[in-house]
Length: 348
Image 1 (cartoon, rainbow, N blue to C red):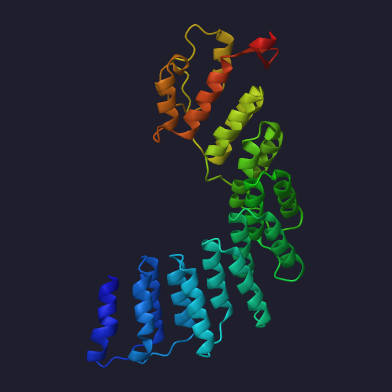
Image 2: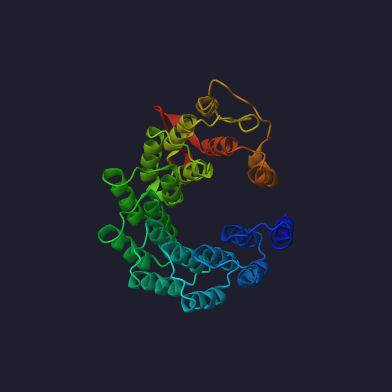
C-alpha cells in the first residue's frame, strides 16, 4: 500500500497537475517508519527540494520518528545538525520526538543533553517531555536520575500526572524499592491525581511476590475493589494466593479468592480427584469456595501427577480462577479445620 501511495504522490499527481504539499510527504515518511523501512523515508525526505516541497518542522519530525524507530541515533543527530544549518527552528514536538527516540534506544545521556538544549533554546518542556524522560530513566534502571526529573516536575515544571506517578511506581518496584512505590501511591491517594488501574498494576507485583508484604497487598487489593477497578493482569491473584499460602495464611488466601468475584471474574473451581481419602472437614472447607455458579473441570489428582501439574499451569486454556482454586485446594491438604480456623498439620 505504501508503494501505491508513493507512486500516486511522486508520479501520478504531477501528470494530473495536482500540487503536492508537505503533509502528504510527511505522512508517507511516517508510514515507511512504522513499517520498519527507514531508508525509504530518508530517500523521500531528500527528494523534497526536487519535488518543490519546502521542509519544515512537520517533515523533520516525521523523519526523526521514522529513523529513531529503528535505533538510528547517529543519523538523527546528523539530521538535527542539518536542520539547524538550514535555518529550521526546532519546536517542542521536535525535542519530544528526539528524546523519545533516544530513550527508546536507552541513550539516556544523549536524551539528557537534548533536554538541556531544549531549555537553553527557550522551549519549555511539556508534560509529555518529562514523562518520556522519566520512562527512559526507569527503563534504564536509574531511579536516582528519574527522581531528579520527578522533583523538577514538582517544583519547576508541569505538575506530575497519573502517568508520571505510574512510571515512578513501576520503576521503584522493578528495582526492589517497594517502600518508595508505596510512598508515592499514598501521595497519589492523599493529594495527587486519582490512581488508575495501571497504578495498581505497577504496584501489585512488588507486594504479591513478597511473602512479608501480603497484608499490604490485601489492603491495596481491597482499595482497588472499592474503586471498582478491574486488573488486566489476572496473575496478581495467583501470585498473591501463592504468597499467602507460602506464609501459612490460608484464611487470607480464601479471602482473596472470594474477592475475585468483585472484579467481575467468574470463579471456577474443581476439587474432584483432590480429596479421595482426605479428611471430610477439609473437603467441606474447600467446598465453601464454590460460588452459586460452578463449573467442574475434571483435571485429576495432581498431587501424584507432577507432569499433569506442569501442563495444567502452562496450559493457556486454563483460566486463572482454576489455577488459584487448585492452589488453594492443594494447600488445604496440609491443613485441618480447628475452631473455625486453619491449622497446619505440623502444628497439630
